[in-house]
Image (cartoon, rainbow, N blue to C red; front, side):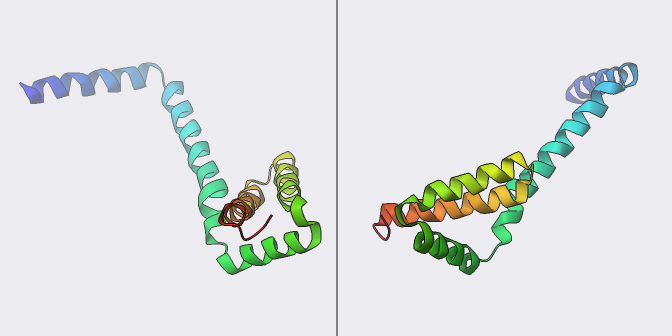
Amino acid sequence: MLNKSCGFWMQAIFDFMRSYPAVPAFVLLFGGVAVWHAWQFRLKPLAIPKAKINAIVDDLIAQHGPDAEDWARGYEEEQWYRSDTYEQGKWRRVRRELWRRYHAGEWE
């Protein structure tokens, strides 16, 4: 009975895809954009070495003191306006490190 039921649903899905070919195309397009965005914004910035992020954070703290997080947010927002998701993800990591240091009491 399970095989007969599964066969019915599979046939219904294939019939739908044949009747409305644009729907699967849009689903694939949307899925592709979602995967690309996850790669550029979340995963690719994780490949930046921690030492480089720490160096950027140290420079921001040295240059801007207590306003370092505001400057990092500004850089992240600038990359958002330029639609550069990789750089936006990099600055998000910098902001996270600044927040980590702030909550650990390493920076005020």
